[in-house]
Image 1 (cartoon, each protein chain N blue to C red):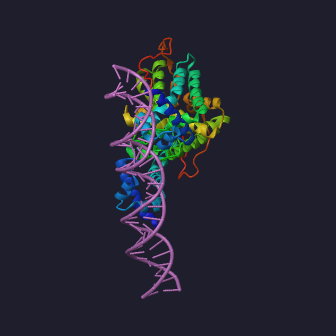
Image 2: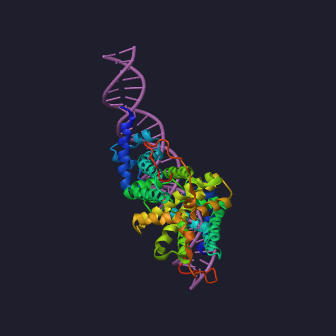
Image 3: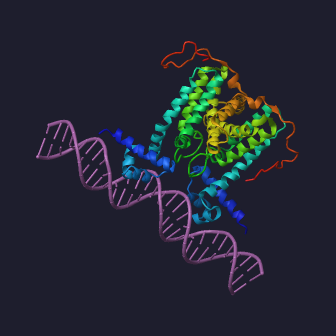
Length: 211
Length: 211
DNA sequence: ACCGGGGTGTTACCTGGGGTAACATCGTCG
DNA sequence: CGACGATGTTACCCCAGGTAACACCCCGGT
């Protein structure tokens, strides 16, 4: 038979293991879960990265499509942005395993710049960039701003969403509001607090652990 | 003699190797560079993570201190934010090796949520949170907003800075402007572009709000 | 009926990295 | 001197990624 069906079965097994043990699951474990041995996995996926990549693509497709759709909703801009934020947070909330794969940069990557965002997130960043380019009038700077903002917003949501998932400090809608407010310049618009400036020395205000 | 001097020498060697081979350099390689063998490294640093952590702390101290200082500059808020952004970008620009360590989440981490930001970046996020809490009047939501924004801004700068370092699409000051503009709500304030709806949409809404 | 190819699967092995045990040495301080 | 705390070593363990060589099974072509 064509290799595709088997591949799917193997991915199912890999999926189970990864959801149980995290993205660092060993090839042996995955093979065992599939009831077979390693060489078969390597025949199908080349190497570990290939397997993880296939798994990631399979999982992130839904989230990416959802974000893309949210970016195209015919809403007021603020509502659309909130919708996108909510879509992303809902996605990572519903399936944390997906989230783990999503943010897993490059399994055993060589290093260097360019991998602060995992591939799946890079795709989301590109969607945002495209949406900004298509929807917002930014004058001559549009390309630069759209790209920088696409990456920046993606990173912002990644880091904030990660923190939210971990500590659950508030409801999802409230988190969406907080992030949308940030994007809407609330940081810039808010008033100064009166004093609260550093005393005089470069000393510590409260608890600056010097790691 | 106290262990400290030797430790420093070992860190120097590790530093050389990491800068040459990236953060995935092996303990053997580091030991060889130091002219010794593995067990000594383990005596000093416990395990690989300990070594990398020590290396990271050594390198990121400067950047963290610089960012902290920038956050406390007595400037208009916009200028202060630009100053912080510029400080960060200048830091990663000047020493990309530092940057690599900075963003290296947890060497061989177990996975899960909470490590989207590497430890060093988490410290930066905390600094931002503190600064926002101390300097900006955000009403009742201050704690939530400050924390969410601290993480969010850090992630934004991480992702955008990563892209900037990699592709160098513009000068540093221009990049700073782009990010500050984003934080200042320029995305929200800009006008809509006229049409630019998705071409592949199944059906076009008769009177889409604002697309 | 035979054979070959593409699929399935296996056992056994290599490489190399993290990490440890056991042992040997040197210098200093009581 | 002896003990301690540092230096260092060789040799080993465990396990993960990855590969070689071999075996089976089915199906379609000649």
